[in-house]
Length: 70
Image (cartoon, rainbow, N blue to C red; front, top):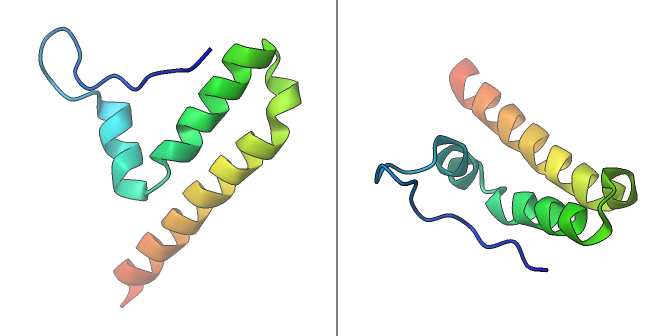
């Protein structure tokens, strides 16, 4: 089962979560987590995907934090 990204919600607005994840550069990793969970039906079996996504988000946060400090 492949999880397809939602391009638009019913009201025509961008999905705020997808928009935020696009800005972080972690959207594809988010999809991999979703796909793994949909396939395995057990998030515990998706720790590699979850950790990759978590690391991506943390890296983005650090980069943003260093931009603010400058």
